[in-house]
Image (cartoon, rainbow, N blue to C red):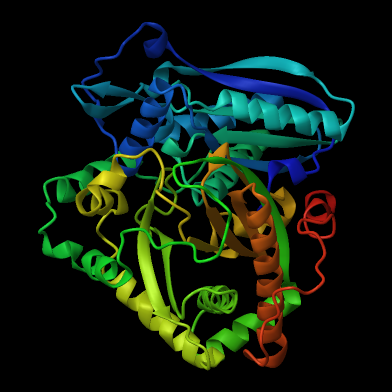
Length: 492
């Protein structure tokens, strides 16, 4: 399982059917549900930005989606039942968000009152027409301020089907996507066999949000638990760590995005890369982060790496099977100065990560609100921010069936003012997906950076470390070629 742009996904043509979620309570106008609870810090900020953007006639839009395959003729009734079971199981998916007395209320609808309404969309004769429809459908259908907050559909063919679900970020995170695939297909296969649906417990994200707010809503800027953030700000000089390379952006301006994906290491190279990282006393994600830091520094960035890193809040088993926005974002810094070899940089990464994890409990949004209130009031991050994310998809729920289900994750945002990069490891290797501003400077900078990073991780795998300077202007092939993206989608 990997993440790449939906535009690069080859979905074979066929007949498209969608299922719209209906709620008898929602249609009756029931808005004062006594079970209403407060939204999480992440959800509140996300919803507030959507409200303010709509009021300013400057709407923001984004979504996270997942696609996966069903082999054989699709049983539409069984799939509909599995989708409805999935939505009923996860409370956050059947919630409406409403502003009540200044607070964002999260109101779950009764699962018994939910139903799915099937709709035949049409038949598409070519993959190109189908892809265009899906891209447009996701962009137009996901709205933070409108319920339901996701869409569900399938492309049916005589001997197979491609299922798709697209969500607003307010109800899920990237780690929720493997859960979607595993639960929907496990339930579907059970229903096709005539068996009962058997899934592990999945506590509600609303319970997690409630616990988090009870712990951190009352703190102020003097709270000692903000000490790690304060120390980071003191050394960096500002709350957000800047992306250190030129992207050609102007202050207070948002830009259309470029969404690119590429293969950094194949499966065999990734195995060797992991062994090299372990020998150096670290983990593969630390090796990737060390490589990113060195490439940024050699491109003109500072010797001390400073960036934001999303960290899962699912805990050790508590929320493993739950859908929701279980992500905290934390600052990390470490020494990647010139002259340090791979083992030395890895040691710095490990030390920086260990220090970060020791303070991970404080929610990012709450720290942002308390320590940078002027920037918190804005609708976006103030400037290009250094951001790094890594997921080993082989460890996700259902990973043992990924070769059969062939799932893929897709993210999209209408506009941005910087760059974000996600790294995923799966059975095919190590992959990179980047969203960045569509400017000439950013295209040059990110193209050179991606190629330098590919050469660096390959060098670590082949030579055991940094053995030579990283050239930033080598000949490079375009990212996202059919060899490493489209071939993945249609190889079986």
